[in-house]
Amino acid sequence: MLLEWATIQQLNAYEYGNFLAMLGPVPAVIGVAWGTIIYSVRSFSDKTNLPEWARPVLDGLMALNIDLSVDAVAIRLGMWDWGKGLDYQYFGVPYNNFWAWFWVVFSFSASLRLLSKLPGLWGRWFSPAGAILCGTAGVLITNELITSIPNELIHYATIIAVLGSALILVLVLRPEVSTQPHDAFVFLVPLGFHAYFLIAGLVSNAILDPPFLLVVSMAMCIIALWLHRNALNNWYRSNAVAPEDTGSSRKEYNTFKKT
Image (cartoon, rainbow, N blue to C red):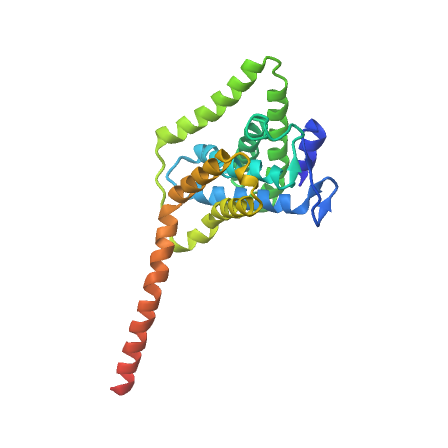
């Protein structure tokens, strides 16, 4: 909530529609959404063999996978408005938004990981509040950096260079994921975002304006499914085996009684 309020005050680049619960100009659900996204992507990167310094980079890219299918549909549903029209840049969403999303998640993730290493109660109790302050400061600084570049070519080249370098870094490091069946519940968070906006977009026809937006949303959903395939496969196997195990236990119990 602090992040959204500070960003609106700094840039005045967008405004939210009417939600049931609002804290000033920011819907309460937006704070919940940011929290669940950051928690889920950190849970994913913590299951990889990436060095800890590289995990916030993966976290930022995972968040972009969500936003590439969410933001353009959300503005068509009236959840928020960039004030640029639906044909502006990425289906009505400024390219700066993806720069901001990456740095939001990167800043919060890196701050929390760093501050949690403080000894004793400092690491346990101070790290969440400290991450909020440091993460918000990081976002405001990177916002100021990108908006202060007057040359349009250099401006967008900077966005492409930073996000492209982040992607190349993760691909070079080739992270491997080790998951357990219960991890699927956390990893269902990004899949839930994709499913909600895909279904809402289809029901309202918002995702068909233009139709290529549906293609992008489907592609992001497929990428998310592929990234979480191990966790979902483990979860499926555990649920498929459970009834058989239960049946076997009953047979053994009945045999024991007859004996």
